[in-house]
Amino acid sequence: MTSLSGLAGTGTLLRFALRRDRVTTPVWIAVNALMVLSMPNTLKSLYGTAAERADLLRQVRTNASFRALIGPLYDTSIGGLTAWRVGLFAGLLAAVAGLLIVVRHTRDEEESGRAELVASGAVGRRASLTAALLTAAVANGVTALLVTAGLAGQGAAGALSFGLGLAATGMVFATTAAIAAQLTESARLARGLTSAVLGAAFVLRAAGDSATADGGSVWTWLSPLGWLENLRPFAAERWWVLLLFAAAVLLQGLAAYVLAGRRDLGMSFFPTRPGPATGRLGSAAALAWRLQRGGVLGWSLGFFLAGVIYGGLTEGAADLVGDNQNARQIFERMGGQSGLTDAFLASMVGMLGLIAALYVVASVLRLSTEETSGRAEPLLACQVSRLRWAAGHLTVAFAGAALIMLLAGAGFAVGYGRQVGPILAACLVQLPAVWVIGGVAVLLYGVAPRLAPAAWGVAVAVLLIGWVGPALDAPRLVLDLSPFGHLPKLPGVEMTWGPVLVLLALATALTATGLAGLRRRDLTG
Image (cartoon, rainbow, N blue to C red; front, side, top):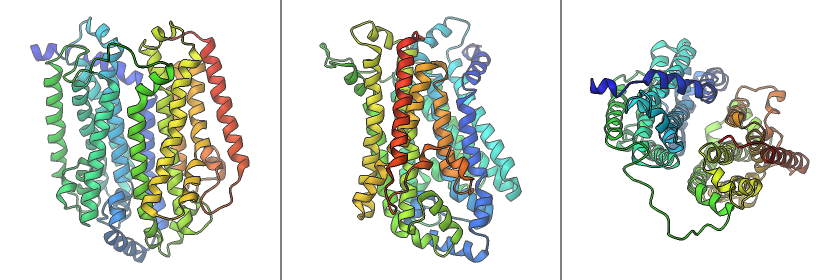
């Protein structure tokens, strides 16, 4: 009876969570499913002959850098190529979606005070945690169904194992986030801690895959992302690997439940340290930096390491593409019509620019978090204007985007060691498009705060256009919907200032309109 009473109200909280996530979660699911399902036709055009596939297999087995980035290739069927090409990235997306969902419906609710209000009703002690995990399970289950149905034509068993593998990866990190939500007193720290675990899993898998061509390294087996590739969809599936996922989910879920039952609501096992007796923050901008510095530092490190990895891959890009004209054309559509090396560099820098758009949206929407949690109102009751308060966070958002792109360029310089100036210019030229996406987030927050989360949809849509559009040879009209489609494809081409200045003006106008709306509207509280 005690255990059942601890779950009282779970159904109601689940329905509420699904309603709250009715926009963001379908976007995550759609992006992941579309990324996977767009690959088979693309790969058919890229590697249409047995000779081309055999050459690709040889290149992957002999190129440790590409194995570290994407993973080993086990089978040259279209299904096997799809699992190789997007399996790791789809697993990462599923993991990120799972951790965000769980933290949002557990620690975020406690931090805002809403969980305490809900707990005053007929709600069990573990109901919110159960509802959060079930919400993540629904999202991962829908992703698995879409992927399985979409790839069934390539082989039913392979499609099912791939879909289940993605869902299982998402649930592993959802339960990791559930533990982090019990250990920390801040949703930001819970997300950061789980993201650090995800980053460590990627590094372990990359180290193992660079060492061996068959995924058999002990480092690979220490990572859930390594389990996903060792499930081997479309390549004599290893169904028993799913038991590793199940064990991890059950053990982590049990740990989260035990921890949830041994702490008070709103508390944690690692509480936040008390601040100094006298304040050291003299401005709203300093407070914004204090609140967001952990995120900035994490993104900076990630972009620097990504630059090092992509820079190290540049020398082998020509060898991997070889004489495959279709692959060459995709790189040229992403990176311009210059030489293959410059096109590869431009396409990789462009991908980092697309990801930087996610950073700027997250940083801008910190304004919304501060407002809805009630922390902004006491601050604005002092001698701090709304514009000064917002300017602090926007400075971190827009200047932070410039910092991470600069560090990405520094990483390219370390990994590639050539064209340092042109690569830094290529990284910086992404900023006007990144700032346009940030401007959209400011506009939505300032004018229609309830629609502010839709900025994630805009950023993800732009990411999808940049990632999938060139591979599908999408019409120019579609590619032009993204601000990144108007940027010069540096390095390798002449700099054109017209589109850059237009995008800068558009970003300025969007931001100014959003700030004007913030000045005039009431706080949502």
